[in-house]
Amino acid sequence: MVGAASAATDLGQAPSVGAASAATDLGQEPSVGAASAVTDLGQEPSVGAALAATDQPPRSKTETKAAKQTSLRPAPPCLNPCMPSSTRGYESMRRHRCSIRGQIYAVTTATHWRTALFHRFSLARAVVNTMRELETGNHVRSLAYVVMPDHIHWLIALRDTSLEHLMRRLKGSSAYQINQLRNARDQVWQPGYHDHAVRKEEELRSMARYIILNPVRAGLVDRVGDYPLWDSVWVDGDWPCRG
Image (cartoon, rainbow, N blue to C red; front, side, top):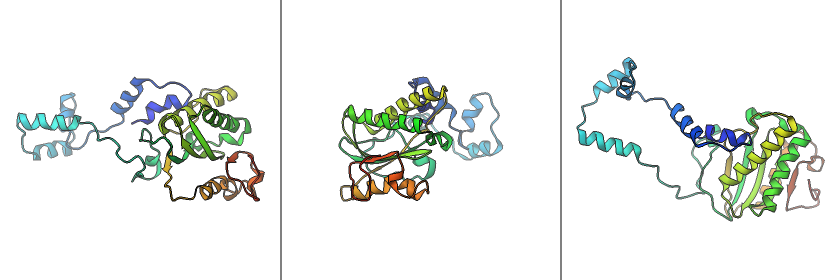
């Protein structure tokens, strides 16, 4: 479970290696057929597990060794970094997926427990300042963003970093600043993020417009010009120049 490993990052601290392995060890439940593993730990297997294990024919030493090697085999590498995940909801908030330099992504990430932290303008500006620092540092080109009360949408083109590293820096730096302003040490961001690799045929200008109109659709303002926490490289007569 990667969420525990990124908890320190969401708090603005560097995650430890031990946190990742501990989360993995504690975040899994033995399957029904794992009766023998439970017994080796000095625990009584459940009736269902014992029956499931009994129904299986005994394995030879060669079969047992081959099964162990298969279970330890690493997962195949990501061959298509633009392929969407088949999962939905919280599971689609994924980390450590492949990314391509120069690729355009629409990224969404939310605050911990969807707390409306960004009703407080100074906390929202801490996020905006971090975005601009990442762009100034040539890590990313910011095409459009909006900071909503409990989440952000960001349309970006990657430069000299991966998407995972970019989001880790965004969350870590902004969480540190937010906690400084609140005199707290709380978790600021929800683990993970959702990203959509933008296809070449998709209309970026329309996507940017859709992103910055989120406050209007949410009923926070009547027109986007009345909302202070947005920005886009595309403007027209209906949009103010900068948020």
